[in-house]
Image (cartoon, rainbow, N blue to C red; front, side):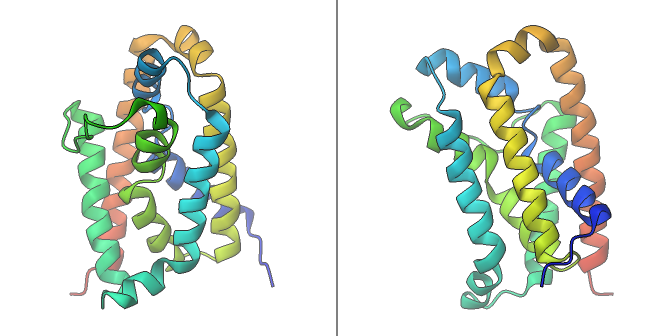
Length: 192
């Protein structure tokens, strides 16, 4: 039934960790905490987890409903991941958030969606289904949700420890990893 493979779990966990980029998002999380006064860590983690797990099991069906094959979605996702990586490495903002969002729901929007479980994460999850066993992807999602919860819960403490300079370096490192993942996904799914 479940075929757990620790190498696959590690790969999926690292890929999702790079896409979710909870460490790179720490400056955004800290700014959100400053503006709203608090972040509901458990609520944000549970909503993001619900979105990810739903897309893991229903993502292909949703794509079929629109007549899109997983390969095409993976290529589109690779382009999104590439642009996200470029944002991280170059320090530019390509994906803008909606400034009219209500601050009382900040744990859901923009934190759970689209920051944690956005288009890049959903695309990655569907793309991972083409290469990895579902049980290993599910474990990778859970591992990342635990990390997300831990980072959200201790975001104030982490900002004091890391400092802005180290956060910037980590963001650029994960940006390069994300660029490499995007290129691999593109190469794997392009038909020559």
